[in-house]
Image (cartoon, rainbow, N blue to C red; front, side, top):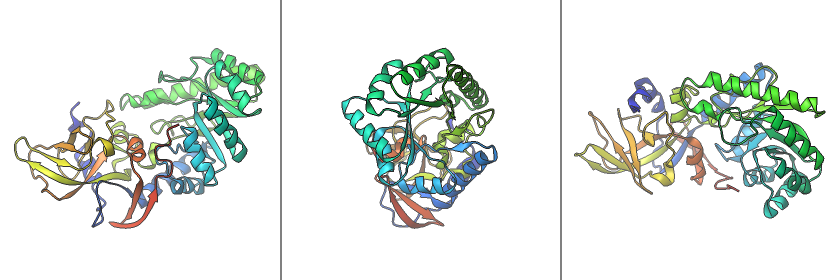
Length: 375
């Protein structure tokens, strides 16, 4: 794919609009505070206007301070991907947590889940009858949501009948089936996929919920979740949305049209450590251990350098980001540039802290509290 067709000139200008503070020790993950707060406020308001709950996914930011700001803006609770993430947020006093993942409660995880269930209102995903018995042994009455595959082809039961079967097994083992959930991940396949993916989410949730109610389950929650589809699927009986990446935005989200370029709130500050005249390229100190190697189909390379036209990180080594650049001005060695990553979530998971800036000044540093809590 031609990257220039994805990152438009006006997008490049918007990405670069906020100045980097002086004296940054690079590479650093920098968050523009006013932009991030605007993203939170707009999402909370849009869902409230639709009468749909807001349960943001914290795997994007992994930061207690940001989760608190989301709750202050009106979020009903939070979503996590792992038990480890949930433990971090529960320890910080957050009391309503949904682990949107089909957790398999092996012996160590069973003990941790039981402890979590004592500390907060905990809900867990399930997509197989086989998981019902061990989950029931963890905590009788544990609230679970049946995961339905609405088209992504990752996890989740394939249809309403299978959802009813899993729900029946869950009930038989003492679990409290409170709803169904899905993730419209197929919205990431192309910029035009959002509407259809949102329709798939809504249809899958409604049919699964109907099947569960017919079997006597008190279905309270129809939970949908992805940044591209969060607004489009907030309708027709869906009770909550679980967007995550919206809080920062990234290169992939702008390519999909899910986040406006001017709403991208996070970037990587990197120093140019080497410049080559032939071929025309430069090297920054942000490689795979900062930018990750996430290469979605909608963008080329591993990051854009918006202050330089056509500059794209085309290769990453552990600590080297190789930036190919077309005609025009090039940076000098020692210059600090902004790199907009493809995918915010893995970038944050690789960072110790978020450098919080406003008007080009560092106003705080927030720890990535759940960094690498991947189990």
